[in-house]
Length: 154
View 1 (cartoon, rainbow, N blue to C red):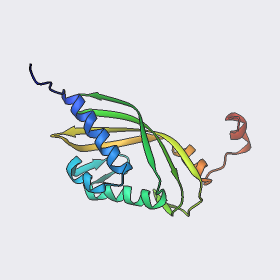
View 2 (cartoon, rainbow, N blue to C red; view 1 turned 30 degrees about the vertical axis):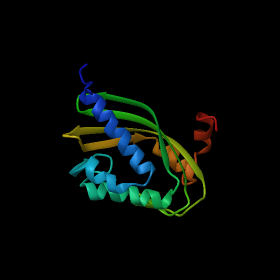
View 3 (cartoon, helix red, strand yellow; view 1 turned 120 degrees about the horizontal axis):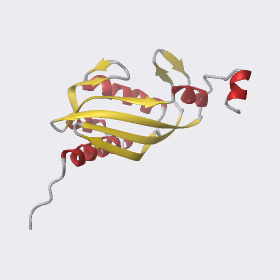
């Protein structure tokens, strides 16, 4: 009987699962083995694993119970896309893209899609797509106009 070998896509999906499990467990030390030192984050337009780790540290201060549940995961070549349902309580201060949001105690829920490129078993670049408008509305930082409420049937 021969050994079963995982494809590169299966290995990459396993790495993404390990990454999400690590930050769900607040194990940022695992980033050192998963994320390349010169990782590039397209969403925040910054380079470096330490800067990437810092984003999670800030997020966990603001949302200590933040948790991401994987809903779908797709891999092709050196790319992995994953869709998660994230939940958390805004119980600490949050600064995002230069705006400051004091703790509200509100429970938030949002779907996010991440894309990572993996080389030699490490994330080398990535980014995310999410609904910032809905996120800010849940925080109470954004109100729709009357026209917007009618349009979106609020």
